Length: 289
Image (tube, rainbow, N blue to C red; front, side, top):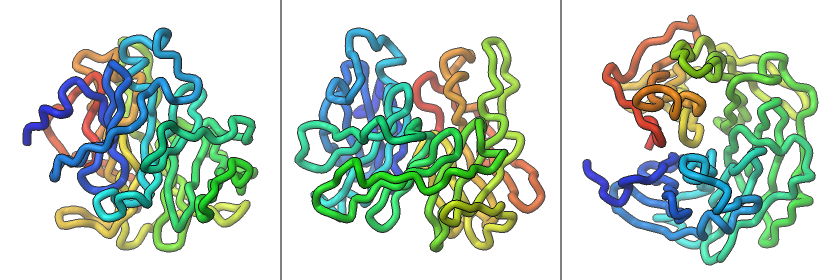
């Protein structure tokens, strides 16, 4: 399929089939649906707290937003959804509702707010930091106050602390945190980065336990929102389907990012490819849509 609407744009998957968050070098941001070609205009990037348009140059400007997640499908809930963004350095949380002229930033004084990933469940965003700490953001009331955010985990698994990449997803009544090892072992001139192991943890208030068996569930991770689903046709349970998520490599490697993709078997730790070709890109490596 050809999408002239996406030429020259940076794209991130947002967790609902067909929807993408997009940004261009002029700082314009949109939500775009691949199949209906619906376009939703968002406030420009210079409305993000801490963003300095003149100082952020080139790829640093266009990739200022690191993650994006929708609470529901805009095609079915046209004015009753929330878009969450993880943006900037450190990676802070902002959100937008339809009709708003700007983004609302979560108070940066909240501990552990350098988010690695975010998920949505039943009126709440759950954010996980690079240190494995979890923050709950309550959107069940009409008026959202940043004081509603609270840390629910202070004791973190050793393998999550200071890990390469941390993801979070809510599935079948369980809050899961996933550690991706081998993602950021990259230095300029070195193309040896790549997944070595995934570890999955189930979070219970302030405790955790490692999950060795996902049953009939598959996880989809990478340069897009994290998903946990019953395997669609052609996929298997107890597998982690992953795309490249090593940002350091995107601009340093010839051709860009896209090298680190595959299917991880949680039961025996083996990895097999799900795409055997090459699909490299400087801005947007392959992602789940």
